[in-house]
Image 1 (cartoon, one colour):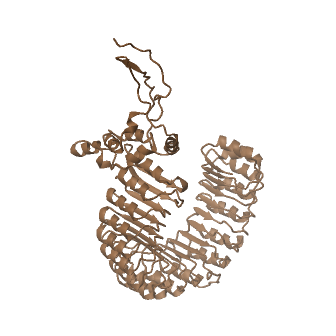
Image 2 (image 1 turned 90 degrees about the vertical axis):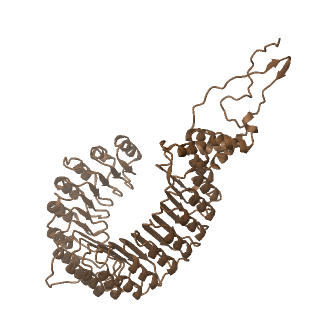
Image 3 (image 1 turned 180 degrees about the horizontal axis):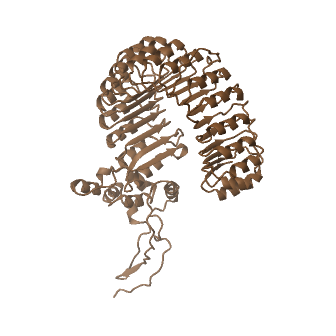
Length: 636
């Protein structure tokens, strides 16, 4: 009769740790799994076993776990039969080897996925694509992508993936992108920025497995060529948005494929791709004209022909941005306007295009009947005559923005305001804008609600007087960076605004004093919601006292780099009607630790408080504020 031997504990047997004895693999896995989507099951107590004797012969259990000796083919078959995402995540935590095996299995190869397909009444929540993941810099590696591919299964499915700034030797490669493709067929949006080691192979895997893809964003991907883009076009018919920037191997063939095979495309942006020319742009526009509504072309080697195609086939385009098109002449923009195809165009932005002249600008105004927003940046050949002619022809224009258009003068802006029903006018860094005295009668532009004149050194007292006479219904005024304006110049404008000012930005107006703020609060205290006095060094506590007494709806106040002191802060805190949400004292050296009680009182409603470069406030005071104002975002 066989003798029974007492149970003996063997320290080498499994005790709740990994099946693998290789500590290197386990260490690598732990460093990954602590930061990615992998499910950890609770550990169970190990079952203790011992040698036993049968027929006087001693049989000992092998010290190596038996599953370790299985070939990969067997493990593959085992993993295919795992019931769900949690079980797969648990196995992925065992070792890097198991993780690699799991990501080699396509989602459709799992037995559970096949069962769902066969049973039409069952619903799977793994394909919805609820989850969003973003990997940046050193965190963007193949191993992390592999863990994301396994870990998001069973938790809603990966819907959006963004990889940015992975140019190191350990960055993302085709292998990592292939893992996402096999494990995340629910992917709908993919963004790849600065990933030089990802090429056509990885993008082709995405195209092959992720047929639900709707948005693709490629920026600084030098290894991706037309082949990868063609694969996307052939396999992702639901693509609605495409953005390509600084991809030197992508050219006309890729865009032609997108145009022919992606009928749902609604938005396209192509920037700084030297191989893209007229053939690619024209094919894209002519093939997707039914739904394409947002178009941006920048830094491309296209000519007048492409703009003619845009003008003819852009029947659904509502937003158009053209920038840095050096080979497009006046004729191209003129034809684009006269083609009469941009009837639905609402917003047009043109930057650094030498072909925009007075003649072509007027043609665009006539050809875009529903144009409401126009932005012209660094268009050096536009003069006052062309601008006024455009304003007369664009009858629906509501917003006009001019930046660094140096041939435009004050006469041009007055002509625009007198000839169309603008609601918003913005003039930035236009060196031709200079004060001129105008004694002739001016017709009021009662429709203008917002006036912004920024960093135009020639704009001063006379320009403000004209603006006051022309625009009595202003509600938003931005005069930031106008160092030359004074109290005497600004007061008439404040007095002429009949509707009540809501937002006022006077940052950088160095010569303004408390007199302006006193008038502003007296005339518009009942409507003012935002006031920016950043850099107005002559503003003192008197202004804060006036604000505290008169402003009822003010929610955003910036007095950075001014002469306010603790007394002004105390005056603000005593105003019971104030409901400030954003407050900035950045660079106010006279605001000190004495303001702590006042800041605590103000902080009851604050969401943001800026105390940067307040040298008289100590770190201890800042810490007390952080402890007390836990709802407020404090900068120090």
